Length: 264
Length: 264
Image 1 (cartoon, rainbow over the protein chains, first blue to last red):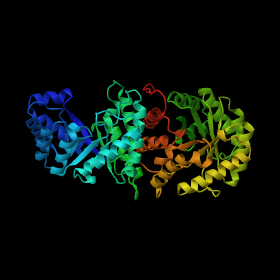
Image 2 (cartoon, chains in turn yellow, red):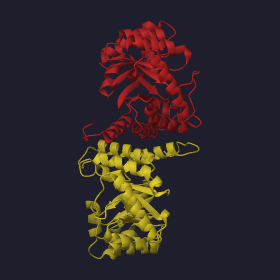
Image 3 (spheres, each protein chain N blue to C red):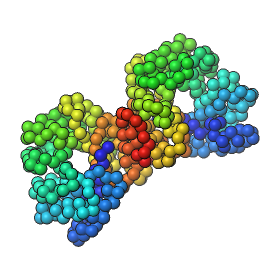
Image 4 (spheres, chains in turn yellow, green):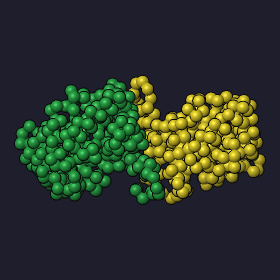
């Protein structure tokens, strides 16, 4: 499992405060800690960035790259910020997070992915930006989005499908969580390609003040279910060790060849 | 998920010592603690009991039933001890642990299950007592064993199939662990019956001095995989909370109808 740390989010008060104060050292140190905790890439979730988007993204990218040598996952709907971040990324292949069938971002993000030869996360949202309610709709969206991106000149191996993990607090949230698992299981056959997939695990338990034990138990159990269904990448809180360990254990159990405990 | 506590095992030094000293209070207290920890039944694993088998089993059964009001899972190859335990069990329906196609125990255990109308755990071992190496062999054994037990007059709903979880330290242990998952997934279709299943989770990590973090991570991830594949009962260390929580979370995620966090 490839872990993308989701801890750098502008919606977190500590992050917003450090950004407002231009505190680059905060982000250098955060990046260092995320790498040490086991991250394989760092998500930079800046929000929409209405003011000076290029400058803001460049600030984050530079600070994170000073703190660690991991590839970046650039998480913004702002195409100018995305472009600035991609131009600045220097550790491995960056990931665009992301594109969907929404007309407002399909062309711009697909164009950037092609230009920078970046990986691109493709959300299974409707063209209206809504979360689909079942696995059949997700699979139909995946087929459209995959074909559309290939048509734009993106290599299939650059595409990473995100079936959109719902919060469990939503009506039918757990039925949707099951639909995500089902989608992962069926995607390679539907697309006739060994497509890579990603799930945003923190979404599962967001929106409710649940006890920590419940959050970690639900995330750990769910990531094992996802892993078994073929998940390749997970976007998650890299400082919450239980789901990481569950994913590592699951990956070791599912791997062909010689088994090893040495992952712990 | 129905949890059977496996903590009362004669192979544990504290248990062996208390038994040798006739210390009933030890077992009363242990039973109390197992019930408090979330057990739905208590496994009494006495070993072969070459001397005074009836007396020994009666001692355990009485002490455990004094400490808690849970049904018992009687875990011995000795048919005399099994009979004595079944005769003494008074809290709900006892479970015979267990039967296999091995001639030495098939007839005797099946006869006791029928006589006491007990649940019975049926191990997918070969008639020679060996652990099968793949899921196809397990499914073939399950079909034979299920048919054989039904022929002996056991109701199908009394039968609980145990596909035999291998220790990961075995050669190909993790491939076998995957075969167990596959077996669980296919059993209801192969038997054409919504058969109940059980797995001995502690086996997975037995036989090696692994760090606790690895044991709990492997058990937690594996029980989630088993749960998703349809497992109904788990025999496990009831004082190790992480796998219990993983199973509870998984069960809540998989349950149709309204979702609730209230399990934690």
